Each structure stands twice: as C-alpha cells, then as structure tokens.
Length: 354
Image 1 (cartoon, rainbow, N blue to C red):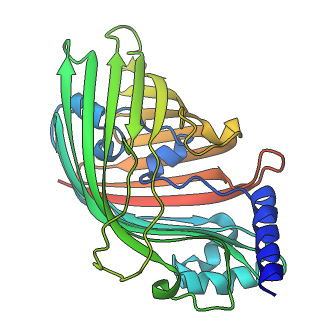
Image 2: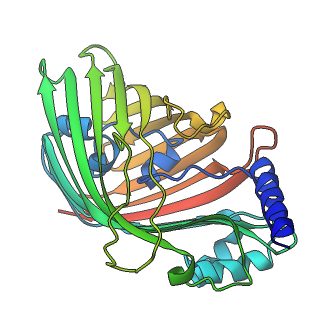
C-alpha cells in the first residue's frame, strides 16, 4: 500500500508540473508597476523606490513619508468572492470547490515608509495567496505567503548621479504554505499546513543614466544576494517545525527613457527582463519579459500601459499633495510554455503621505 501511495503521489506531482506551472512570487510589487507591465527597477522614483531599487534613492530631490498605503489585489474571475475569502486558505478552498480548474489570487499589502535622498526606511505587511483546485477536487496547488518586516536602503551617487549604487537590507518574518498537492479534505489551519521562520536578506543595485536627451537609463538589481534563508524559528506569529522555502538570488535588468514633452507633460518607457541567472529554472521567456509606459500630466494624472508576461496591462493614478489613488489591471501567466493561461487581475491602492 505504501508503494502504491508513493506511486500515486509522484504521478500527481508529475501531472501538476506538466499541466499547471506556478506563478512567480515576488517580495514586492505594487499597482503602479502592475499597470506598467511589471516594470519597476528603471522607472522614475516615487514613494516605493526603497522596495524596488535602492540605487534610485539617489534621484530624490526631497523627502517622501508615506503614512498609510493599503493595497488589495484579486483575480477578476473571483472578484465577487474576494472579500469573503481574502487570503484565508480554508475559505479559498470553498471558492475553488465551486470553481475547479480556475485560478484564485488575492493580496493585501501595506508599506509605510520614509525616504530622502540616498536613504530610505520602511515597514511591510503582505498577505498573498495563489491557488487552483484540480477538476476532481482532490488537490489544491497552493502558494500562500504572509510577510511582516522592515527594510532599509542606502545609495551613493558618482559623477553627479550618472552612476548610482544602492544597497538594501530586509528582515522578514514569513508564514508560508507551498504545496502543489494540498489535500482540501484535511485541516487547512496554518498551524497544520504552514511553515514559519525569520530571515535576513539584501539587494544591491546599479543605475547608469546619461544626462542627454530622454535620459537613457540602465538598471541592474541583484535580489537576495547569497540567497535568503528563513532559518530562525521565531514563533512570532506561528510555531511550526518546518521553515519557508529558501529565496534564491536573482538578477533583473532594465532600460528606460524619460522624455519631457512640455513643462507639464512627461513620460517613461521601460523594458525589463527578470532572473538573468535562471534561478527559477524557467524556459518560458515570456514570463521574464515586461514592457511598460507611463504618461504624467503635472504630477496629478498618470496614465499607464504595458505588457506583463505577454498580457496587456493598464491603469491610472489621480494624485493630490497628500492623497493619491491608483488602479491597475494586468494579466499574470499561470500556465506553461506549451499551454499558456492568463489570470486577469485588478490592483487598487490608496496612499496617504506627508
């Protein structure tokens, strides 16, 4: 019986790996980036620069203090059920049980921060889930992450800012469920299915910007240098015997231009390629590719468009001196190279800043 059980488990794992690829989880992303096709490391600086690319802290001319910036995100095919389940694994099962073979995604995120030229400090709370149940209702491919932590970054400018070098450190407590064959009939309490741990990781980045027409820019960011391991069992929010998965080092690169069309109108165009080291061992090039543009009228209205992993993205922002609202829609690739599958999502964010 044990041999039969092992064979069935291995067969199920092989079937899942072939039929359903897993989405790429990221430590940080936001509505602006989502609207711009996922581009984020070579675009103009804003309140979220600390989390995206510490080298870009050198572009600040003043101070940014974000008091509150709640952001929520959900799959469009389950938007009516989002507030009933949010990121709860057990409640997600109930939704998927009536929507088998459909992907469910939800994210809640808050990142208050303070940044000035060459330095930034911030906090992060993120709850995110992605899951799909097979047609038989016997297994849920589930990725759940709940992060709480601190991030600090510094920057050094060389040659009047033409060269920017940045580094950031983060200390994160993570609760994780990473199981491609989670049994929906068993207990789905986090204490039974989750892993908990605290880890410290760091990013280093480089930006090269030419002071000529359109300000052509090259950005390179090495994330989680030397790999980020959650080896310390803190018991801060949950006590478990297992630890979250190691986050492998990865390197992203991007180029951008920033035309100034008139006194009150400017834009940004960027192309970004992820994971140059192939730490994710992904042969689907579309999942690595991001293209985006932003059009800015007087720092009040922003229109954004792009292509995220081959799917159209779009969004806008209405900004005041202290409050702004961002809305985005984008497609995430949750299929395979042989059988692509889009999960269409909506991302919404409100920011209150000093």
